[in-house]
Length: 334
Length: 255
View 1 (cartoon, each protein chain N blue to C red):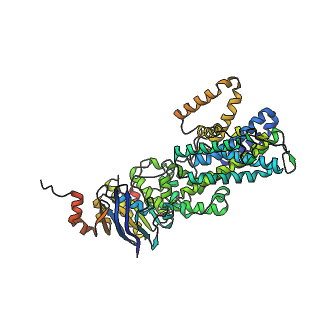
View 2 (view 1 turned 60 degrees about the vertical axis):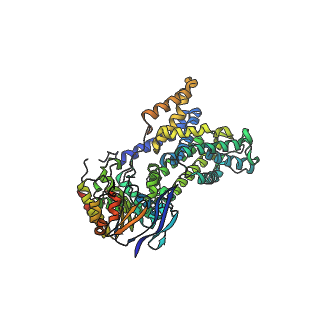
């Protein structure tokens, strides 16, 4: 009944080795591939943040690039206008993206499935068009903003891909850890109940509107944080980085990898960013192959490449310690 | 004192009056049965009590507090738990997790505690697990804790819904056709289970079509037809009430 699990020591050793490998990678690979790994890391974090909303809570949200844009533009505006060092603005980028999510999601949070999907597509388009139109005279129109301030954290200047590699992947590691903890908690379970059966969740005492909103805001905060890192890395922030098709890509990462599954989303991010680079020769067929892969996946493996595993609970201390009730004569066939 | 009191509750869907000026009381520690032909508005009435629908008129008083129009999760928090007529479990989750859903409203861990797992959160989780296993043992499903809810037999799924409801520490339990789809043996066990729940001090309001069960179990019956109460009384009286017999069997055709 209980699936076999790796012994903890073996798991730890594997993780230490993987960690050491990750640390050495930029020195082994050179700037071009390191840069690709950076993109992968950014997509992984974006995928993980969308996974909270789409994967765990089951809300069809296809406008995630809007929150990412709010974070990136916050950092870029603070840097170009007020000379705030770009990575210092990360917390504010996250907060503003979260506030933006709260404001736009609140009125639409009761919508279900496809209706929500359409509205979120609207949101990402509105944000992109607002950016193109140089809203409040702050966003620089379709050319975007050019960040000229040098980027540093704690006096250590960051400019090479390897620097960003460590920044992005340590953030990814932190994200994985925190989201893993979150998944195995009251909060994580609540999101899953809502995904499974909204009405039964509410009827079991779960404040579904609150949790849906919290999922949206949390996902947006994370997208905003990584938006600031993206702005620092790319140095020019412009509207075409936050198009609807970007949102679709994040959506695809989550669905393809496995909605609600952290390893699945990581694999999804790896494939979506990595495969086009690896198969450069066939780049004319790239979108065709991508579309075909999605169709095949949805037919044969709708739960994604790595579907979410089951949570493990340590119930042994309690089993058998309670008197069996009067209905215990109902024996279940195994 | 009455734990639940409905005062002139009405609900209309378009031109259809689903619940028509219904008043009833559930005594603390009582088992009250709500019966009536199909489409009489029994489940609608339940949905009005649990906050799934908002009544057009009337009020719902739970333990002296007006709960009319509150959201369902608030009503659960206040101590009214329910099961569903067409079983609504979290099918793709484990039996244990289904019961933990009921524990949810008694736990406090917020977003940050859920992310960082401080000792208080861990203690709370352990307490929740203990409670969930206790409720599963109570309905006799604790050996099934790791199974998916969808893999349980139909009768066991009904029991799991009861365990989930009990995990929220209700004072009033609302059961919508708990014996639906159960065989004779299971129904027999259910009868004992519901009595035990009442003996724990939880008042019970239930809808049930199995007349045998209802007559044996309930202290008092309320009969609904076309959304209105047509009779109330102890099972013995209800059985002989001509109005009820007519509602169930129809009048003799004069032709």
